[in-house]
Amino acid sequence: PEWVGPVAAGIAFILVGGGMHTVQTAGLALATDLAPREVQAKVVALLSVMLLLGMVVSAIGFGFFLSPFSQIKLIQAIQFAAVITFLLNMVAMWKQEVRNPEATTADRYRPGFQEAWADLRRQGQWGRRLAATFLGTFAFSMQDVLLEPYGGQVLGLEVSATTLLTAALAFGGVAGFVLAARVIGRGADAHRVAGMGAMVGTLAFAIVALAAPAESGFVFACGTLLIGFGAGLFAHGTLTACMQVAPPAQIGLALGAWGAAQSTAAGLAVLTAGILRDALSGLASNGAFGPVLAGPATGYVAVYLLEIVLLFVTIVAVGPLVRRVRDAPVTHEDLGLAARHARQMSGS
Image (cartoon, rainbow, N blue to C red; front, side, top):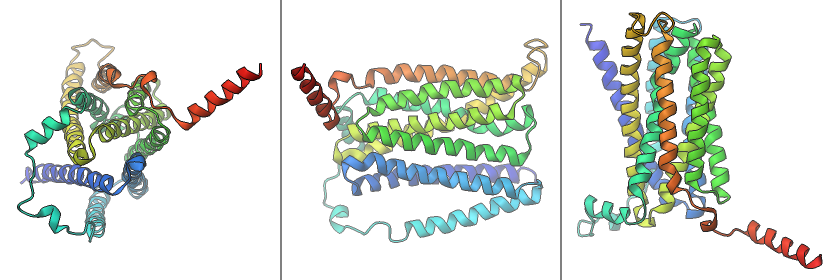
């Protein structure tokens, strides 16, 4: 029956999303347990960059494989991805973590979730921090279901070309994660980095929206690259902030809370974006907004404008969390500059 295909595809998406976010949260928790605190930001960046590099390589490979496009090639690409994903996960999980009987003994005290969460909330403004993560992730994730159909339906790009947009998005994300790890490693405030990522995102979505009237695939690609860059800065900034604020014994809980906020926001964002695009595009096609907005781009651009608004709201939410300059820790570079300034003053 015809309904079997859509139902099977829906179940597949649920399994992929559930598996990815479960592995992400547990993997980050294990990595931070093993890494010294001063290099945890770099470890987070490394794991995230590997995820994005996988997206870059697979997107480029699929782009070439699907040109020229055919339904059979698309099915073969999905089958190949499923097999490779299974094999890589088996290799990755094999003997990953040695069993520790003392940590899993039945008589060991384990605080309940409510108790552990209450202890974590006493460490700072966790409600605002997770709300900012939710808002920013929601704003960045609404485009996930729209970029490729936007390129095909509005700009007339081929399937292979729209697939390569995923590579551009992931490449921008890699650049964002690397830059965030670099500046945070030098003492920059993680919340400030997240706010900068949201600001880059507002510019990126404006560029993507302008690609329709400009009828330019190049403008669209530049905007997509910037979306990935801003999202990388934001994700790394919020995740590192949660890790830095949490006590060492509760980093796993902090990562779980961040992952729950992020994955929930991403799922709701994709659902909301699809519904809004379809509803607004249908109204526009029926002439509800006048002849000027009767084209297929109306629904897409409306969602992009909503994402810009949400990113500004995210910046407002992140603002009070940013460490003030006078509260920032004194670094060796600061001491060196102060010493040189004192010598110059004494010499004059």
